[in-house]
Length: 226
Length: 409
Image 1 (cartoon, one colour):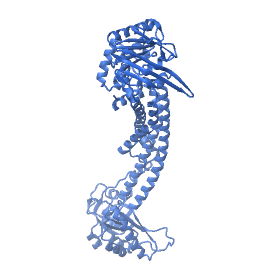
Image 2 (image 1 turned 90 degrees about the vertical axis):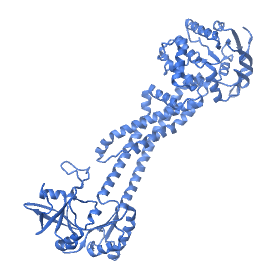
Image 3 (image 1 turned 60 degrees about the vertical axis):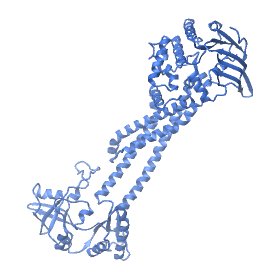
Image 4 (image 1 turned 180 degrees about the vertical axis):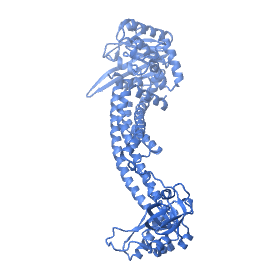
C-alpha cells in the first residue's frame, strides 16, 4: 500500500519577474513501512519537496496523496490538522523550543491534538524512554548534547504516532558517532513498521535506507533504484 | 484539534515567567496608568463622599435655605422676613415636611459659678426634622412651649458639659440675661471628621453645633429680642426631587413680599449638590482623558514589544506550525499573552494604587475612597487594552508562512 503518491508534482516560485521552477513534475510513491532517502545536491529541489511532503507547503500543480487522501488542494487549516495527525518532523537544527523542558517539547504535538495534561505526560514519558532519554525530561534543550537534542526531536516527531516520519538532514549537525546513533534509531523505527523519509545530501547516510530517490534540477533521476 | 483557552493561558503565563524582566518592563506603562486611574478615582470618590457627608450634616438633600441676599446693592433694604410672613409661607405650603425659622443671639449662660458665652437659637419643634438632630436626654422644644413662650432651654453637649460637668442637667435652672430657663433636654453629640484640623484644633467639624443651645422661637422673639425678624429660615420638602418645585414656589412668595426685589436668596441643597456633581463630572472627565492617553501610550508600547517578540520568535512559531498548531492557535497564544501582560500590569497597578492611596490622601489632605467597582473597572480596562493592542501582533504571528518561519534565523 502506498502511503505517499505524487502525480506530476510541480512547484513554481514567483521571484518578481522571474519564475523559478523548483519542482518540474515528480511522479513517485513510497510504500507503508518503507525507509526512503531523498538525495540531491543543494538547489535540486529536495527541500521544496520535503516541505510539500510535510504539508507545510502546497504544490503549484499535480497531486499529492498522503495515506489515501488528496492533500494537494487542502486549505491551511486542514494542512495543520494533517501535520499534527500524520507527520512527524525531524530537522537538521533540531528546532526544539529553548525555553521549554524536554518533556514539554515532546508534549507539544499532543497539546495541539487536544489531549489532557495527564495523557500528554504519560505518552511523552513513554516515548522519551524509548529513545533513551527517560532521565532527562526536566532538562532544557540547551543543557543537552547535539545527539540528545536530536533524540528529543525524534521523540517529538513520533509521539503522535504519525503515518510518516520526515527527517531533513537529521545528521547534518552531528558528529559521526551521534549521527550513527540517530540512524540506528531510524532503523529501529523502520523495523517497528514506521515509514521514514529522510532528506540528505550525504550518500553514506542515504545508503542506510531501503531505497534512494535522487533529485536533480527538480526532476527525479532514478526514482526506482533500490 | 485545538488548544483550549485554559491551555493557552498556561502557555501565556509560562511565557511571561520565562521572560520576567522584559515582561515587567513592558507592563510598566500599564502599571502607572492603572495606578493613576485608581488614585484619581478614589480622590474623586472621596471628595464626593465628603461633600455628601457635609450635605447630610446640613439637613440633607430635601432642604431649602432662605437667607438674606447680601450681594444686593441696597445695603439698607430689609433682608429678613417677619414671623407673620414665615407663618404665611407655612400656611400655603402644606406639602412641606418641616418649617425651621430661627432667630439667634449671643448670650451668657450661667449655672452656679460657671458662665459660658455662646450662641442661643430660637427655634420651632421642626428644627429637629430640618436638621435631623434630636435630643439624647429629655425633650426638644414643643408646640406648647411655643404657645406659652416658656422659659425652657435645650443644651448642646459641650455647653452642658462646661456648665454641669457630669451632673444631671434636666430640670435645673440656668440664668440668661437676668431670666431663669429650665433645662428640658440635651442634644445628641454631633461629629464630622475635620480633615484640615491642625495640631491642637478639634478634629470635629461640627463642634460649633455642640455649643448651641435652644429656646422656643416665641420666647426668643418676644422676651429676648422684642422684634419678629427672622434672618435664617429653612423649609424641608418631602423629597429631594419635590424640593426644586417647592423652592420655586417659596421664592416667588418671598419675591412678592419684597415687591419683586431679590432681597432674599432661596437655594435648595439638591440643586447645589447636582451642581457640584456636574463639576465633578467635568473634573473626572479631564482626569480620565489624561489616564486614557497614558494607557494608550502604554498599549502602543506593548504592541511594539509584542511585534518585536514575535519577530524574535518567528522560528518558534514555525516549529509550532510544523507540529500541528493551527493559525488560530498561534493567534490565541499571542493575544492571550498580551492580555496576560496587561492584566498582570492592571492588577499590579491596582495593588500599588491602593497601597499609596492613604499616603496621597494625607499629602493632599483629601479623603480617598476606594470601591470594588473601581477595582473591577481598572482590571477590565487593562484586559481591554491587552485585547485591543494584542490583536495586530497576534494576527501578524498567525499569518506567518510555516516554511519561511522555519527558515528564519
